[in-house]
Every structure is written in structure tokens, then in C-alpha cells.
Image 1 (cartoon, rainbow, N blue to C red):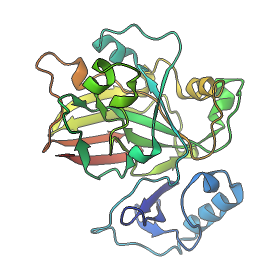
Image 2 (image 1 turned 60 degrees about the vertical axis):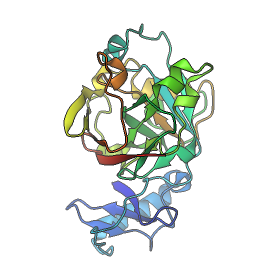
Image 3 (image 1 turned 90 degrees about the horizontal axis):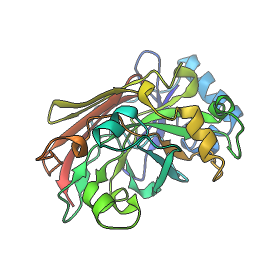
Image 4 (image 1 turned 45 degrees about the horizontal axis):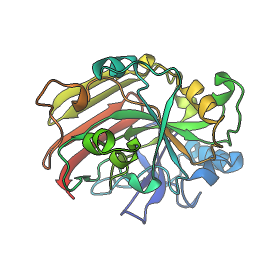
Amino acid sequence: MKLLRVGTAGAEKPALLDAEGVLRDLSGVVDDIDGALLADDAALGRVRAAAESGELPALDPAGLRTGPPLARIGKIVCIGLNYHDHARETGAEPPAEPVIFFKAADTVVGPNDTVLVPRGSVKTDWEVELAVVIGRTARYVESAEAALGHVAGYAVAHDVSEREFQIERGGTWDKGKNCETFNPLGPWLVTADEVADPQNLSLRLWVNGELKQNGTTAEQIFPVGEVVRYVSQFMTLYPGDVINTGTPAGVALGQPEPKPFLRAGDVVELEIEGLGRQRQELKDA
């Protein structure tokens, strides 16, 4: 299924995109799309049955905002330097173990919402990423294969980053990762049964119409199952938690000088095969 949430910010209602591409209203079946729904097999069964019935009310998408596809996110765990090609372009050694940092849930906005360039920023960067959404509690998972059974679905994430704040201002990466609007998510939460192989997905990102990133999840140093298994050794992952799994080559940081960092007025578009497309216009905070 392709689950999503539509409406004004803070007042989104649940919906799905059916097999014919028609937007359908789910608000008569479930209250919202969140961790509680993803952990409830019976509720998901009702959603599937409603989708297959063809009786869900159609929604007119014209002028209707698409919000983040997941409400009440618990935590966003991010994996840094998780693509061989991205490590090469930044001159970094591939890590021996996954690099973990966090984004606050309040950085999440809709896939087409405005992204704000922070005040004083001169190095705002782009990163298309595969987001993994947890559907079953993961605690000390024993194998990568078993870890995939804890995944409810996948989504497109834009891990917007401010490189000066991240790298040059001391401390951890978090200052460059948690600025307002720095995690557009969606448009859809695509359930795991529709993604045959999370290690065979193409990722692309354009800035002002110019292709900047063109990669594949096959380049991941630590595949999705291993990422979920590894993270579960250090923290418990709950339904509704999200893992951003890293970005392929092509970010501004890896370009020759002068590096083409983002400015107000730029337009970023990004997509992952089968998971949908985002578009954001940048404005000054």
C-alpha cells in the first residue's frame, strides 16, 4: 500500500493511493497513520480490505497539500557515510561500523513544503535518502534477515544539512542536522511488501533542474537489514521510529570549489524508485 496524509499542516487526514493512482480518503477507517497503526495487524488488515473494496471515497488532489506520511514520529536515527561513492567523494574512509546521529522529529515537514535556509548559513546542502519506518519493536535483533521483519515500510527523506554548522562549529553533527524544516518526508509510506529489494532502488536529486545525485541503494556500505539490526543493539526501536539510511554521491560538499551550496530561491527535486517524488523551494529563515 501507498499510505499518505493530506491537508493543512497539523490537520492532515489519512489517505492512500490506490492501484489506479486515485487518492482515497482513509479517515473513515483509521484515525491517522502512525506507529500505533503500523503495529496493529488488524487495523492494517482493515485498511487493506477497504483499499481492495474500491469503496473508499475519492479525494480531489488539486490544491490539496501532502503532509508527512507518518504522524507522531518517535525518533529519527540517521546513518552517516553509508554509501561507498559518497565516502569516496568526501575523502572519508568507509566506516568500520555505522555512524549514528539523530534528527529531532520536529524537523519533519511535507515532501513539497518550503525548506528554510538557516540564518547565517552559507553551506546548506542536499541529501536524498531512503527512510526506513519501523513497524515492530526491535530490541537486540539477532540477524539482518530478522531485522527486515521489523520494517513497516519505506519513504523518501531529504536529509538537509548545514555543513559549516555540522563540521566546523565543534561538537557533534547535530547542529548541522536539526535546523527547522531539515527533514522533508514522503510523499508516501510504501509498505514493505511493495518493496521487493531495498538494496535495489535508484535515488535521484536535482537542483534547479540539474541532476546532482544519481545513485542506488546497492552502494550502501551497511544494508537496510544490517542497519536495523545494528541500531537495535544500542537502543530500542519502536513502531513509528524512522531511520534515514544515508545518501549517495553528488552532494555539494563533495563538489569542486566553489561548492554550489543552496540559497534562497533554489528548487530541489528528489525521488526514489517506487517511493515517489519531492519538490521544495528554499527560502530564508
